[in-house]
Image (cartoon, one colour):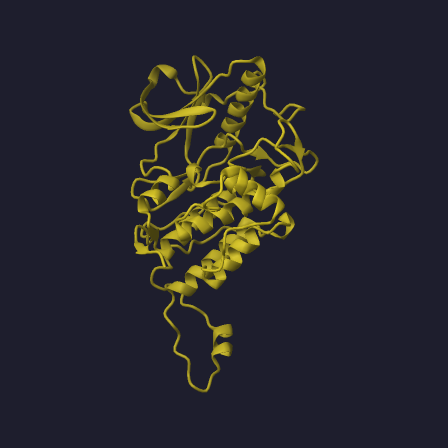
Length: 352
């Protein structure tokens, strides 16, 4: 499916007929987003409200080949992986324009949602609920051997009720290979793992050794942002933030985070990628924290030491605010999970 240079070729990429969109049934409405390589519009397909991503063709032969490769790769991955926290793929077509059609999420981007809230912060349970949505999406991708490489609030979309987060934009996603190095074509500097940078600048086409743990680093920055509702590396440009993270091992301050959350983010953004947890472990840590903050304070008899009791405490599985987020997981990594409908989302509190 892939060619020797790591790119998909549209010529060799055959779209399964079930995913082929009939352009005559596609109606494009107002623009709702724009990136470096595509514009996204609200629209309709077969009377269904959808998001329509129109991919730019490029001017030079090299640009055209790269954009075709990006399109083919994104479609291949979107059509292969389904999960409740991944934007649902509806279809694509290459003529008369290059188009990817997905479900329309009316809650907007997580970035916009957070900015609109400032100076308030998300309620901590809501923030952790969103983080769990993101972690489950990433666990699913990694279980299929896919690295996203561009995990940031602009690529995280909210459902209309703003109770669920879904991961979007697979334009930079790559299949992980143990034998090949990957190109240094990457996402936004502020959220990128340090191992994605070269020692001076990120030169076009340069090869870098890295693996799926780059997404764990990005997740840590997003989690920090969910809790603080501040731009990470505030006061720095994107390039300054990248340089500080890569060459001075600078990270946002975890001093004001609760101890367990500080542990999670500092593990995830460790300089040594191999020391970072995987997303199955991240989910377990987040659920443990959510259980701890939602469970009622246990009554400890005077004759039992608090340290012993805390070690042996078993929190009730139906603790208020927790049971709706505790999902029964399958035995296979990446098995889609189904969230209950009463997740405690939409609460806000002031930043402390």
